[in-house]
Image (cartoon, rainbow, N blue to C red; front, side):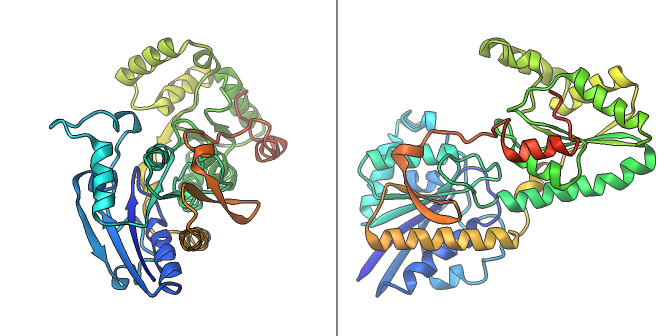
Length: 360
């Protein structure tokens, strides 16, 4: 039996993309007589413009611990997929032509929410698609965990750990800005793991006066420093009540004065408390480096789960993990849905129980 599969990685990179592809290929190699694997360069761009290469077992040797992606990646916004390119090329039809030209049995797509929406679009167009949930934000609906998340948590946590000593030495307020525009899972988990005193996430709008109160309480209790873990998309209660258009205008105005929300919060804290505030932005380090042991295991399981689905001929699904078990989730059910942090989630409540402030 011969199987022909395509692999592509799309959207922002993260740890364990290579480990997941390795799991898919190894899972198939041990079960089929002949396997042809085509890797598409730079995500959907490779599929659109026919840039691909045949991969061999050597390509998947030694990549379990390698970060990034051996295929390269790019961002191709879903909202532009139906819009012809500069030369008038129909992107969707071009992707279909490439798929059929190679006589693929299945296209395995690794990516986050935007990637998943395009994967579902290709499913609707009749292609055999399997999506594997990648993102450091852990915001994909239908799976309890995404590969890349725990590795990013470890890096963000280490950044907060490193800040503790300098914050304590100088008696300062420190803000560590963690990735996450719409969802605060990464900030929540790294904030707790790193011992942050205040955590600000998009799902729980903050009151700057409440934030200042938490800092002042620590000072009165003899604490020399305060550490805030702030998500990129942290939002004040005032801004959260603005109409969408007005909020967009507010962000545009803020961008002219501050590099990000953390710098605005720092100025507000200084004005409210008189404290000296410093900001640290780990940035893209959170996407880089080798995957942690947890992600290596998770990605291997998800990759093997994809291989099993291919062998069973079940397509149009995302391979997720639910209650500790691999599950095939129909793309029609999960595409376009965002998994956010519930303000009443047990993790949030536990953080509040031990005295962490969310500024609410």
